[in-house]
Each structure stands twice: as C-alpha cells, then as structure tokens.
Amino acid sequence: MLLWVGLGNPEPGMARQRHNIGFMALDVIAIRHGFTPWRQRFKGLVAEGSIGGEKILALKPLTYMNASGESVQAASAFFKIAPEAITAFHDELDLAPGKVRVKRGGGAAGHNGLRSMDRMLGTPDYWRVRLGIGHPGSKERVTGHVLGDFAKADRDWLIALLDGVAEAAPMLAAGKPEDFMTRVALLTQETK
Image 1: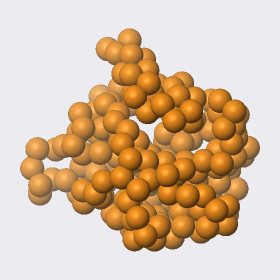
Image 2: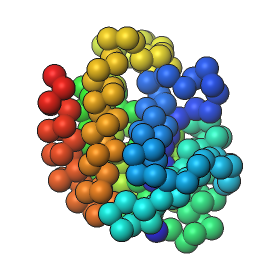
Image 3: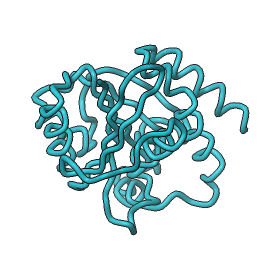
C-alpha cells in the first residue's frame, strides 16, 4: 500500500490558497481514479483507491500545515507503511507556477508541513511531489503569497497542472517519477 499525502490547511476559507495545492492535487486524483468518498480518520480525511494496480491511501491532514506529520505518522503506523512508500504533494516556492518535480528525501526548505513530517516520521526519506507556485520576489512577501488565494490569472495553468498530475498518477504509482514528470510536462505544455 502507498500513502499519498496532500499538504494543506483545513479551514474552508483557506481552500483556494496556494499553500493548499497539495489538497487540490489529491482531490483531483481521487475523483479521476474513482477513490472512495473522503472520511475522517487519523486526524485527517482519507480516501482509498487503486491506481495502476497499486492500492493507495490518500490522506489530507486536518491538523493544519504545521502539524501535518501527526496525521501522516498515525496513518503510516496503523498500516505499517514505510517512509519510502509515502509521497507528499506540496506547494513549492522555488519552482515556476505549473512546474512539477519529484524527489525522494531532502530538506524541508522552510516548508512547515515537510518539517512536521520529518519530525514525526523520524526521517526525511519519503517522496515529494513539488508543485510550483512561484516566488513572489522578496522574502518579506512569501507568507502573503503562500497564504493568498490563487488569482484568476492562475486558473488555466493550475487546472492544467492538477489534471496532468491526476492523468500521470499511474506512472507515479508504478515508481517511475521521471516518466511521471515528463508526462505532466507534456500535458501542461499542450494548454499553453
């Protein structure tokens, strides 16, 4: 079983914020691949499904970003899921809007959701799907940017990115991150 975690904040008023792109990605994946309805469990919302023959537990922590690891740790401990079978979908300031990168391990780079996961899992050795939201240009504007809603001008690239991630998800489930990134890039290029 794979554990796919979308990072975000649970308040309804935060649903359209850039920081919640991880929740958005999991929502589109769950719809596209016919996952079960979301239900409360492990301090979060979970949905189950299968992609490319791999059983996947999708998790959206309801603990707020800074404590995301509590929910992830509870789910991974219950199902005995090793860190290398966990993938976190999260916003990435250091990638241009609409770009995606996948990597295993690494630092939290100031991302409180990743920092919480590292702390609770005892290792940074899980997969990350970094979803580019772009940098506002100066450090002073980062918090407002991340916690700001996506603008109308972002709509086209955001929809293309989320659709591309959902469409290419079987490659990610199969453990082919390079193929996944290539497919997402091709799918999002078609909309430009």
